[in-house]
Image (cartoon, rainbow, N blue to C red; front, side, top):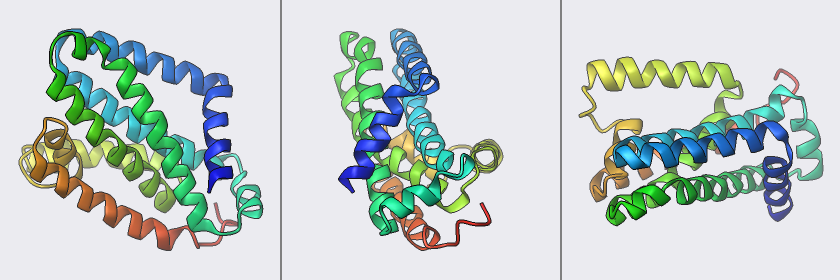
Length: 200
């Protein structure tokens, strides 16, 4: 697990595209935080989800998943290492980009978001391990959020993204529900990681 954790962190800080993405996320978060803490929380949550998804699915997209699993044949350890890496990255982005929220005196909102962001990073890694395709997952998640949670649920139903948003405001019940969604995604991922890699 530690080897996977190290390699994922190294990949995130050495690839130019990753460094640019993380820098833009932090800068945008600093800007959003000066205006509205809710916008900042949404950005860092979706950012943590996106970072986890892209980092996990890149191994399938670039055909490095086989090499990854040859180096660490226990696939659940790989999943755990990836989740840990993207939790750390998501937390770092949230902590740095939230400085304007913290300076603005919204310490409760800052702390609540820092508690919720790791769950969103794990949720992203777990769903990516199941779907294995970045575009499919992003389009599916966007459609789900807009049509199911937004239009049908009016952001009131206890569904994944809604519970994250509510949990990032300090709502303990919503955070517990989102933790439940994350556990379900992890359970699906624990089964999916054992699928054959040759078809991806």
